[in-house]
Image (cartoon, rainbow, N blue to C red; front, side):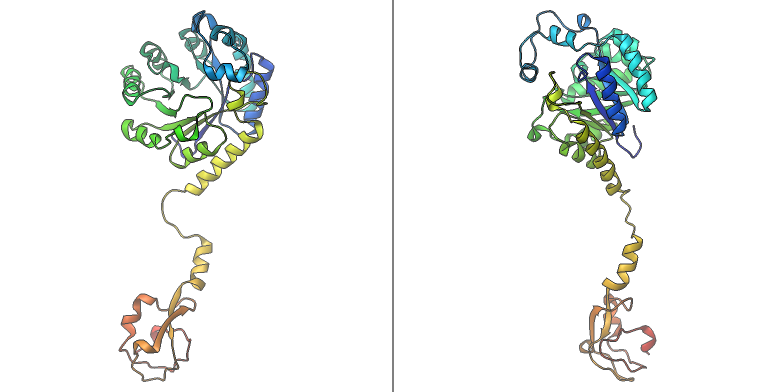
Length: 337
């Protein structure tokens, strides 16, 4: 995750609607779009949420009905056996399988399935949970939504105390969808400066503009929700990309990376050739006979191909010519005594 290319996570989340076949279809889409990884969410509802907790406002709005968190999450739950099947399907499609554990039991279950642990923003302030994951000694991607800089520091410290410093922070605004004016993408730079860790962006805004901008300013990981169909019933479909948008996002990020380059100024072959035509040189402003003493009035600067550079004009003034020079002829040092 620290190489030059951004690690792109296609966030399937719970957009499978509790259907393992739809989850496989999401894997197929993510693989076809050339994302680096596809990510789900692993939990057992009874271990995650209390009985009477209400749905978030955006969830009720997107689903079109109001029920409890427990009922909603149960309808979106996959079994542990399903995740084993999904891991195998990812391997066949040559895409990295990831899933966010939302309970300690899920942390242990996923140990043999994931090469990276992704921690959701909701567990940023859960030190026992963070320490349990840190003990697995695998890289950790930590979302920072809803967190203050102080809370982020406490979370990083909790992980590092276990001896795990393989941490990537994800800037995140926890809203679905997040308003573009609230994204504060420059916080990516703040996180990098404050913690000297790789930083990425978990993008909950609509469209792909913010994701592309995040990569342009240094995001090393990009996480974005996607779905088969935005009109499906479920809490996250409407704030997700469709397959065509996901494909466009991946292509755009790879193009941005090419455009960013390495920061070292190098002329292209085309520039080297054009330089011979477009750069200006010193030419004669009038016919000049051999033996003349050059004055400023005798010289001018024009496009004329490779010749004596304009910055050397003062070096020519007062020199004697040893050849006849025609008007508009390019000067060269063998014309001068």
